[in-house]
Length: 188
Image (cartoon, rainbow, N blue to C red):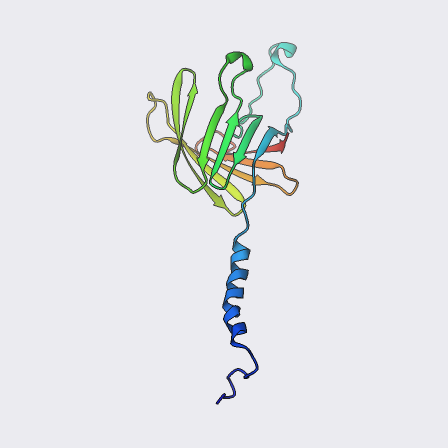
C-alpha cells in the first residue's frame, strides 16, 4: 500500500499537519518584533563648548549654529500602538502659554498640527512611517503668504542607540549647511 517515498505507517498524520503551522509561527515571530518606545521626558545632550555671552565679551561675533532638531529641549513623548504625542515647552512660564503639542498617527495617515505662535496659526501636515527601528516623521511647513510656493519639507528620523539615548536626525532640503542636523537626547 505504501511506496518507497511514502510515510511509514507508524508516523501520525497530525505531526505533518503541524509542520506548516510551526513554519508560519516561526516566520511570523521573526517579523512581529514590536517597534521601540520613544516614550519619556527627553533633554538635549549639549556637546557644544561653553561660550561667553556677548555681554561678557563686548563686540564678539555671534556663533553660527544650526537649526536644531525642531522640538527644542526638553520635550515629552507619549506613545501608544497607534499614536505618538510630543509636548514641547516653547514659551517661558511667564508667557502663560500652553505647551506646543504635536499628534502623529503611526498608521501612515496624514495628521494636521495647529500651532499658535506669534498671534498666527500655523497648520503643519505630517506623515509617519517606520524604517526598521527608526521612526521617520515627514512634516510640510507652509511658507508665509508673501513668499508663497510649495511648502518646506522637514524630515526627522528618531532612533534609540544601544544605551537608550534618542538620536534625532533632522533634514531640511534647501536649508543652509549642514542639511542634516544630528541631535542627541537623554531621558530625564
